[in-house]
Each structure stands twice: as structure tokens, then as C-alpha cells.
Image 1 (cartoon, rainbow, N blue to C red):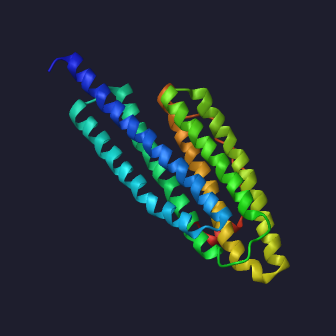
Image 2 (tube, rainbow, N blue to C red):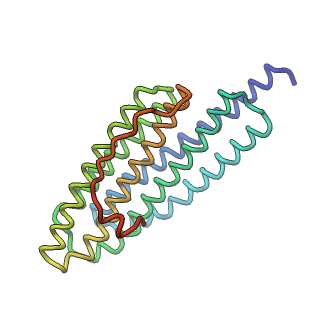
Image 3 (cartoon, rainbow, N blue to C red):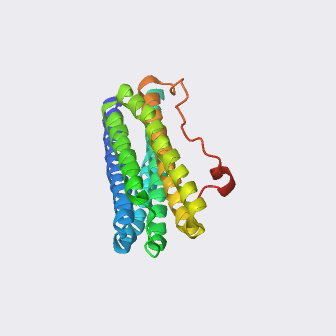
Length: 238
């Protein structure tokens, strides 16, 4: 097989993998929005659909990793092409983790619908999830367009998500102190808010991979972190 055929085969393989990444990204975006909406609407059936849909996201990650490993083994890509393949694998891993957090949100919805709503916290979490979904959309667009500037914009926007989380964290503490009967519901809501904040971290990691893909190095400036809470260290991450 001559060199032109090898290059053509690599390009076709890469196009297939990138199409899978975009499909996976679309499923993850949908999971974020539907998980938050099911919480806001107190809709257990919708939450169950989000939990079940996570299997398709996991399956796509496995397919992408297998295809990427095959490309590396069969095509022996050059350094710049290898960077593309490795970035794809890291992006799929981050997408899978975001999907897990959406599933976790949906799991807690089934518990929270049995409890009295806590102020307008459900709507606040939905707004936070919407911001994360928009960040993810832009991060994936930046990947397809090889747009490092758009990726950097996504990285900066993670601070807004952190600020939303901090505000919710303070509200939940206030509600728990005002009435101990709120503690259980607020703890579940806190974990949902924290999971949503973690989604933003993984979207940021995707955007950082885009910068690496385009420029060959990860962003030099550490991304801003606005999470100033301390309870998370005591509670641990779900």
C-alpha cells in the first residue's frame, strides 16, 4: 500500500472516530439538560430515562477507545496525528464522566420528589446545568473547528459555574441551619450541585485538550477556580 493510500485510510478512520465523538457529545448534552429538567419538574420517569441512557454513552466511549487504539496500532500515525488520536481518547473519557454525573443527578431526583421542594433551588440547578451544557457545546465546536480562542473562552466561563455552585452551597447551609428538617433534602441537592460543578471541570478539560491539539501545549495559565467551599472535603465526592 503506497503512502497516499495510508494517509487516506488514516483520514477516514479519524473522520469516523470524530463523528463518534460528536454523537457522544450530543448524547451527553442531552443527558445534562434532561437530568436537570427532570429534577426541576420532579419527574421520576424522565429521570429514569436519563439513567438508562447512560449505557449508550458508555458504549460509545468503548467504541471510540477501541477505534483509536486500532488506528495507533495499524496506521502508526506521525507525531501531530498521534496528538489528534490521543486527544480524542481524553475527550471521550471526559464526556463519559460528565454522563456519569448526569446519571447521578437523575438518581437523586427519585429521592427528592418524595420531599418538599427547597425554595427555588431546582430552578437554580437547572440554570447551572444549562450553562455547563452550553460550555460543552462550544468546547465540541472548538474541537471540530480547531478554534483555540473559543476553547479558551470556555475555560474562562467555568468560573461562572463555580460561582453558581458557591451561591447554592451558601443557600443550602442557610436552609439547614434554619430548619433541621431540610437537612436531608439539602444534602441531596448539594451533591447534585457539586456534580454539576464537576461537569464544568470536565468540560474545561475538553477545552484544554483543544488548545493542546491546536497549539501543541496545554494552556499555561491555570484555569480560574471559584469553588471556595470546604464542606466538600468533609463529605467527599459522589
